[in-house]
Amino acid sequence: MNTVRANEKWRPSIRQIVFVVLASVVLLPLFGLFFFRLYDNQLIRQTHAELIAQSQVFAAIFAREVEARRAGRIALGAEIPESARPDPNDRFAPIRPALDLAGNELLRRRPDALATAAPADPAFVDIGAKLWPLIVETQKVTLAGYRILDPHGVVIAGRTEVGQSLAHIEEVASALRGEYRAVLRTRIPDKPPPPIYSISRGVGVHVFSAMPVIVDNRVAGVIYTSRTPSNIFQHLDQERGKFILATCAVVLATLIIGLIFSRTVTRPMYELIGRADRIRRGDQTAFQPLAHYGTREFALLSQSFLAMAEQLSRRSDTIATFSAHLTHELKSPLTSIKGAAELLLDSLSGDAGKLTRAEQQNFLSNILGDAERLEATTQRLRELARAEIAQQNERAELALVVGGLKSQFASGTISASGCLDRSIAMSAEKALIVLSHLAANAVHHNASTVRLEASSEYETIRMTVSNDGDPISAPNRERIFDAFFTTRRDSGGTGMGLAIVKAVMTSHGGSIRLLPTEQGAAFELRFPAA
Image (cartoon, rainbow, N blue to C red; front, side, top):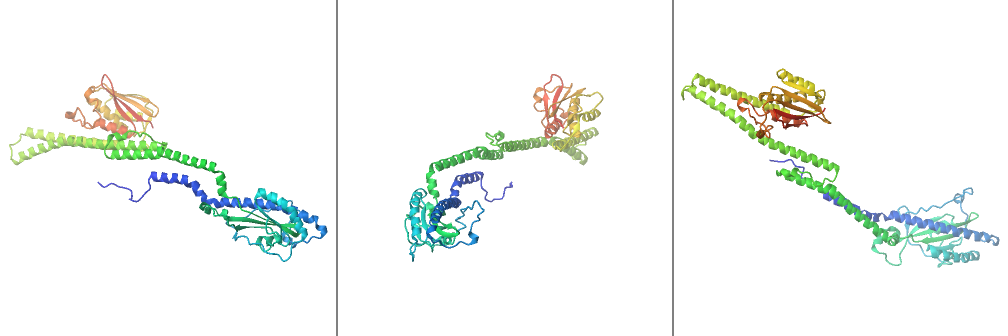
């Protein structure tokens, strides 16, 4: 037999998906290393902000020294344009750090200083000498490089290049015109950096800041500072204990997530797959509940699947048993009909002795009787097929069903009491089939009265159907609901009545069972309440 299967294409298993998800969780911090540029920008801007603050302090000191020497007619530099002059009414004129590795051009290494045609003004040389001790002390803490330039770009204070000109450098030229400017330049380390440094672009740059000193709207000098931004790897090294702890926490969390996912999803799913395979091979023990369900949804799925599989298995067994019984039940009357017809045919053809008229009538009576039995059996089969089909939103009031039952039997045979005003989730036709089969069985077993007692429960309506007829023997009590089992075969019984009753009750979510009784027979019906 060909089975319908999903398209034969590669699909990942749940284990593979879980592995990829967990691996992604573990590797996520490592992927973050490739976003170091975001952190590099933050470090560069932090360095830029520090240089601005330090340069402004030295610029204020420089300007005060220049103003103190104005009486000696110290020569200032270029006049700044009106567009670049600050508004005197503004209390604040901040310079915001805006360097960006992605947005700013990375310039080549800073050009060397050039010789100057004329030496610096002695007054500016004196200012530089006075500022130098402050620069030395500040440099010990900030690690920045400082150079103080006169209005013409000549270095008047610094560790090196004193007396040389830096006016040809781009950022210095802008500052000599009264414009503040900062740039990023390529930095060549003193020794080759480790290979891992290659993923951080901020390691090989240098921040240069040129702050003009303005006195009376003229350039009095330039505070030229530089510094390498903080190294992200040095920061990681300093905080390596925390990073190791964080890594261990991520790995531990990943393992915990994997164990939880395995126990709640993977294990129950593979156990259910194994159960399905065992059910396919006919293992009747595979309908037991799973050892672990994991989640509420998977528990509902597993229970529904196993219940469906068990129901299909029972139905398959029922069909097999039913087919065997049906074959046996149909074989006997068909054999009888065939034998009687052959004898009648032989009698007419003269091959055998002539049958008497009484014998012919007897054979014809047998044929008619067996035909009626076949007709009754097929009618019961149709009822059984209809009984196993439950329509949606069926509803019937018990009082109407009982009224229809009383009309089928002689007056006084049926008595009913209890909550007959309640409605059941079953059509009146199906409910009447159930009660009429029970009443007919009772009458056929010499019962004079059939009593119905209904009582209301939470979601069901319980009805006891009892009679005063012949009791059911102990050996037969276990078989009365089996199809084709009957003790009235000679009188036309098909053995389908109680099987139909049970099929109707089961298909509508109800139940029927035989109650122990000392006299007659009693059945308990549980109808689902509407």
